Image 1 (cartoon, one colour):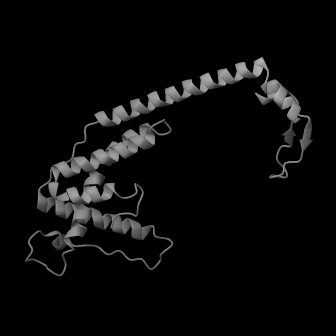
Image 2 (cartoon, rainbow, N blue to C red):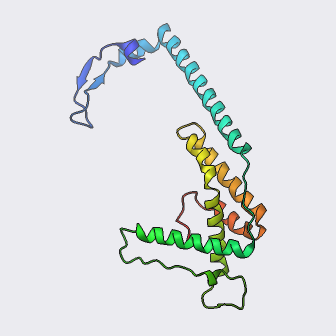
Image 3 (cartoon, helix red, strand yellow):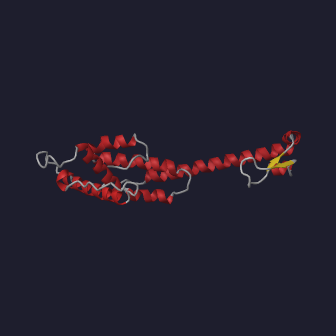
Length: 205
């Protein structure tokens, strides 16, 4: 609108922020005020407002479509026997620990600290020194189940750059934890705890 209504500037000055940047275009206040009182300005302003409203409406429509797609996607949590789930969770935890150790370039003193299969044994009388704290094993179970559900994030990859993706990611996160809680009630408290944390918090233990 500035170029349309005012044309060439009345004065050019060096860019005050970037020495090599484009020169600053200055306009006489009287010319600006006269332009803003013109019928052409009112028409251009009304057209800009209509375009802005249409763009916002289209963005909201795309956002609703994205959320509807994520809300309709079934979340299939695998049902695994408790003893096997514990062992799979420990194995997954160890793999993640090895990966973080391998790529911890900033911490050369970091060493892998694997848990053992015995540490996942649900028998309270076996291997008392090697078993992790129950809360740790619970976290590992949720980590493993989330890993099994990462294929749902392929849906988010398809939505990359689209309006509503951030809201869709939050919705998918809530739905995944809700599905884990429904399938494994003993993990519900850990799932609720994670939903209260920032979405991109520290890596799991």
